[in-house]
Length: 340
Ligand code: PHE
Image (cartoon, rainbow, N blue to C red; front, top):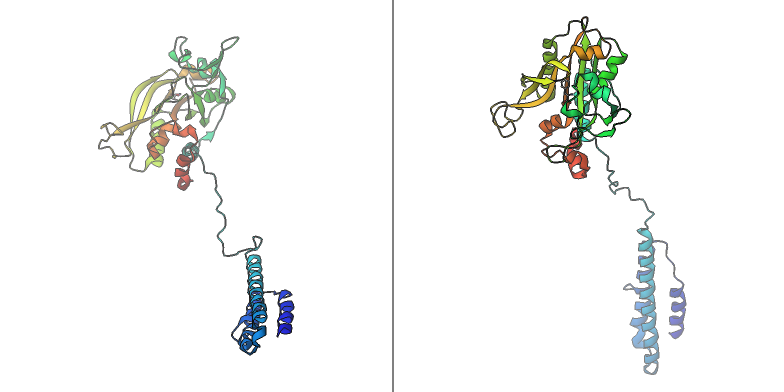
């Protein structure tokens, strides 16, 4: 019997298996109900008394050896099975995070596409400008407060006034200097004003300004274009109203309100109970401006308008703190995923 045990010990020590099924077969072969070791143990009672101790120890060792060997084989195969290199086709893919368009870009694109549908093309110009294009050509009197350091960021005073543009009307001047009418443009871009940063004001913001110059352009044309814009931007039931105002570069000038898009004109907190919210400035281009840019005011007339993109975005998306637009907080930016 000892011989049989030693033979089995050699056999079991040398065992290998290619799969978990093989391991199970081996377990049955040696440790199963009719397995070799189980049979040996059943035979144990026939061992003569004087050998029982020695044989008993040997059988126990063999059984421990077989159990451990089979467990080791099983673990090795199980480990190999969950190999990291193995491709698990049922696993969901790692989600990819896509960037989103900035809310101001979304609103700008919408504004530009509405004006494009009415025949306006896009014109752009530099953010660092000179006094002529931002102020002088636009009929600003020498003592106008915008020419003050308090309102405008100056880069240099000498030899010429170089400054950060305070409105994109400077682009209109540049186009008028180079082009004879008809001119029909919208000028999007960033502008700078020397304001303390708060929820309601920032030292930079964005504008879309428009200019149309041709023969016989009237205030009624201006009104119709702005009404169409308001309806497309804020919904077909939107109404507009024009209030007389003043800008150095337009005469007559007006400010435009739209019927409050929250309460529909009944009066709420946003419109402070009036039913109207202001969105832009506009007017007929002052003949002095046309002259300064080399366009004959006896032949041509035109209108201009200008508005802040932030203001339109606030009305559309209720962003109550202007600073959110430049903080790049992804929690804020991702709120606009769906609007992409
Ligand atoms: N340029 C003006 C501003 O920045 C807006 C405006 C443009 C007003 C054209 C009238 C006509 O506030």
